[in-house]
Image (cartoon, rainbow, N blue to C red):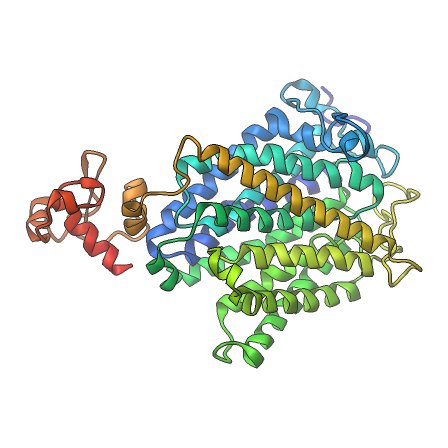
Length: 497
């Protein structure tokens, strides 16, 4: 095949690949080390492993069938929304993926792509890949790893595939005029909803873990947060599909909204926070709130709109976290990292604000490609009716209802033949019991699990000395009914948590 067919624009193609890689870095290692640093020390390995495996699982099902479900020909299931709810499942493996990219139902409503189907598939994959990782934060510290391995591909198929088609693939809500520039609904509202439902179904962490949920490594979390912020330049800058002026504006809007949101959260902490003190974790929550809220809007609003979105969204999420989060319902559901607030509430707020602030002069594809009729949209502040706001609200309600139903159904079905959460003995110990590894091994501790003895370090005492020094505990009292020597060091390790 000609490496430079006439339809290929090297600049557009290169930018899509670079933008996709930036988004990929948000997941691996971004989310992995952000969440890995925020959780308790004993769950760092489990958290990072679930991030890496979740990302890998999505890629496999993405190329086999989910990509076409989100961006292919419609699977016509009935009248109304069912006529354009999801695409036909189909693989993209094979030589045809080198052809010119297209989204069939959007042909004629935007300039034609100037890169290959492979580029489009990879670009859209990294968005699909990060979504389960986001709501992983809701169920950290108790979800059964085997359940995770089954849940991720099922959720990606039945929830994400439908969301993507409805709003991005030319599906029913896209045809009605609902806007979601880069995933405020498809990714973040979906993650917040699914995470909250999953946390409710799986149940809370151990009481001790909820009461002493101290981050194990804030500098590592800071590195992950930084990867998220700068990686978001690809997240929103790439979704214009062209390396033109609109992509630049989306990137600027992203950073403006994020900076304002971070500062707004810090101000709220100082003015009305529990200790009237600014905190690093608060700043990170503000940053994420701004990034999420600008996501559905970055390519539809001007920079003044971005400033408003950052301030309003951070305020709403702060109030949700610090006021709504104290209500009975939210205290009963153990959303470990507050995903329902920073992603669900922020994504919803950003999507609704598009209905107010969408500037009809923004989306005109000033770069490669030509102006296309009917691509610009008017927010209520720029028009004479609230139609756009109503479409935004309707699309949000659909995503919330569908994702809640899919998440609940998948978990209930999996729960019929396997335990959704780890046993209490494993929950008390953490990574060593679950994976025979720990993020910060102590000298002299011996990892003995699954019938074997594996020395982590032996610089201070040999295994026999460790066993002799361990408290005498009967086998029946040991976690999982294991031998006394194993229980001794595990008890000491768990006490440190």
